Length: 619
View 1 (cartoon, rainbow, N blue to C red):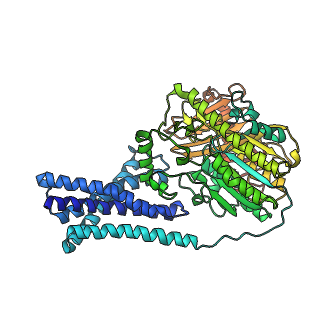
View 2: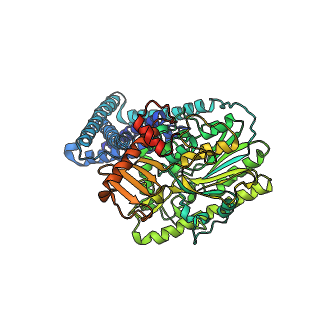
View 3: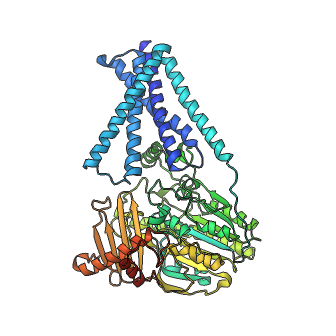
């Protein structure tokens, strides 16, 4: 009987310790990570509690079997809870600190790394002592089982109360009010295809990928041949599209960064100009919890069906990330699109009814398709796919298969673009609607020894399509060869719509006055890779941090005229050119951090201003 009491006590203690660790992380997410709902509290209490129960139960078994570990039930209750919170607390805090504080760039063997881990171990010991003492004392007055049940139910009840109360606060916040205006311009639709390389589309020369809808849009619109992203993963890149700010100004670069409330989004500018605004997105990186709904009167985040019954906020827990990784890498035999994102069919099912219902008033609508993003699914869906989460480093021999799957997913999306255009045709809206089509970044298929995106600034990751169809199909079929960036999308659409461009915007109206800039700047700080690049008509310089996980050289210079694939680094033989490009990069870096840059910008010295003038950024 004593054996059973010990096991029950250890298991209950472990549940309590785990639940407390989970509640702590959920509170961190709610306070600092952004959340539109608070399902993380209840999920964390149960999931972490179950993991803690396994730790506490295991300790109870060991204490019962090994003579010198033997102890009465109250002590086992306390020790089980202490071990659970110490173990889970260390794992969670290490994940949060190394990812969220150090940006996944903390070498464990460095002096800082050792100090951080010693501090975290000290925190784990302190948690162990505090919880062990509290549970042991509680067992002394109530009995181990009763005390354990009381604390466990208290953790679950606390999670439930927090979930209900905080969600009620959100629900009772009231609808945001938007000023009304009288829009005079055309309707505007901005379409962003996630992870789409232009060379996999017909308008940019693809011969083996069929994209008739994009071909039609290109024939009716203006194709910008050399448009580039300023970062190579979704959140900073779409933040740039919507704010016309470099990442250094909008400050969205890391996995926990939220879009600041004081930026002026394209949607805010459009609704200020009298447009009704809506958005339909399915990438968690642009969910409302990260602030991307600013200015949208209706913003539909079409969330995936998260594993294990998790919610959007619960999916931000470190335990969820680990459980998902284990499930995908070792346990799942089939992959279904709904567990990763909602596909183009579902996005259309949200966007098309809204467009139909609002056809009689000027509108601005953002439509974000995820289909080119991994996992790459076999179409029609049959459960077969290749995903980064379970195949982070595919064998190079698989590049052909991955590219074929990627292309088929693009063709699938294109079919629903065709349906979107057909609906606009039927409603009599297509001809006079401004339709802009672009992507947030590209994708790598081992061109530079790697896969996916977010870790380099090579052309395959930052070259993106940009097609703008004007009202009445004005300038149809024109191609523009000058350099342009995603930072130019918002001012261009505002210019076409006749809406004033906010003074903070750093981009330019591509249909306005002035010449293309002579250089473009890009920046990245993702998964330990801190990168910068400057690209001119001919040359491209890329700088990378020492010891970056991707293994990139600190300096790379490419002659894009002779070496468009960026295979021959000539930095060692072109030291003068490297120095000149670094000076230009320094000027652009300084300008990028300032918001709108004008000739009166006091933060820039005259040398920087002179370089910016030479590059076409100042009059």
